[in-house]
Length: 527
Image 1 (spheres, rainbow, N blue to C red):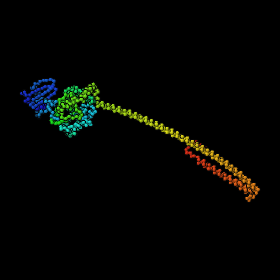
Image 2 (spheres, helix red, strand yellow):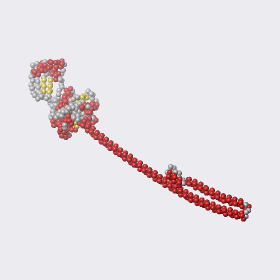
Image 3 (tube, helix red, strand yellow):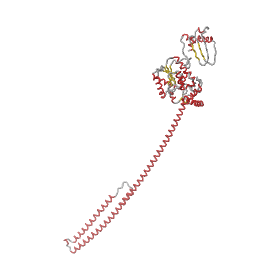
Image 4 (cartoon, helix red, strand yellow):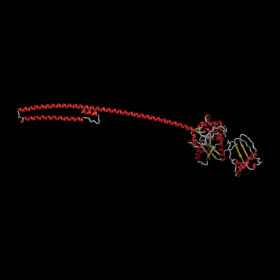
């Protein structure tokens, strides 16, 4: 742009020796502001540590040689109006600076997954990964910001977001809520990157963030040139606040140069970026930037020097902010006392290792408990088997004892039956003897009576041989017949009694079904 403006504004007339109207004022310092007008009046203020004066004729001679050597020929053929690009000067409400042409809303992105895990990560390349995506908690905190935006009369016409994953997700969420086209949802590639913390990157946020706040408050200074974190070897920048100031100035200058009258919503991936840009606009010292720190999902509307200063007056003595600074001093000393090698393993990896160790301990404990439970179950099973064996043995012993008792009872019963049968047999024998004796006595008596009768008959026959008209021989035969009939009668009764006794003994004898051989022999002998 500078070459184009020079080529359009310089002319042959301006290179002559008669251009007394031209004025060169060169003053070297750290910043450069070049204003070139169409009347070829050059006013350059270059700030550096030394002052030097140059010959006016020599400056324009060198410029003419550069133009006519071929560098400026295309621009002379296509003459255009000079560009109006400029670097803003801060604070913007200063009489010597230009006020803002657009209205700005600042929004911090919602809580990312890394923030939800307590990891302070600032590597701009790593933050584009989905590990830094918007978490469910982040979507929840954006709902209130969207409601506030819907109620305001200054609806955003353009939305800029960083390339960090949580910034992109926040922009997509708001685009859906407000139905913004993709020509109004624009990415900003580098200028909105958050401040890199170098060696402390990917560490515990609860430790590093208060330490960084305390470092900036004590060391950064008004313009943020000091307070640089230690460098890292993985490409993570170690920025001062002034480094971030340079990027934010470029971003805001770009918007003020190409648009005016827009309502621009800027989505920052962190809380320090919008706070620092607010300090730049209002002229607040950079070492107090964290008093204006944005919370996740926090929205501030219509940023102006007046609104920022009013908020700064309220928050600079906030007890929570002062307590964080006090706590951060101690944590800063701890961080600086830590060896660099201890930071080579990130906090997330440490968390993963600790979680792995915890998981291993839990696993080993579970294995130990499972082994103990298994051993206990085996012991209980063994004890149950032993108890079952004992009960089975007891039942077997009881069964054997019962069998023995039953055998004894059966044997006693058989012996009792044998004794009873023996007694009955002895009784029958005695009864039979008695009956036989009685029969013998009866036979003898019958014989005696028969002999007497025969003798009487013989005597009668002898005395009167014709008794009843029968001869003595006939009468003798009759007597013998009578004796024989009597004997036959007695003998028949005896045989019948013996048959009855034998049948009674057979019926009285018990049936032995599979009994002992001793019992059978005893019963047989008894019978």
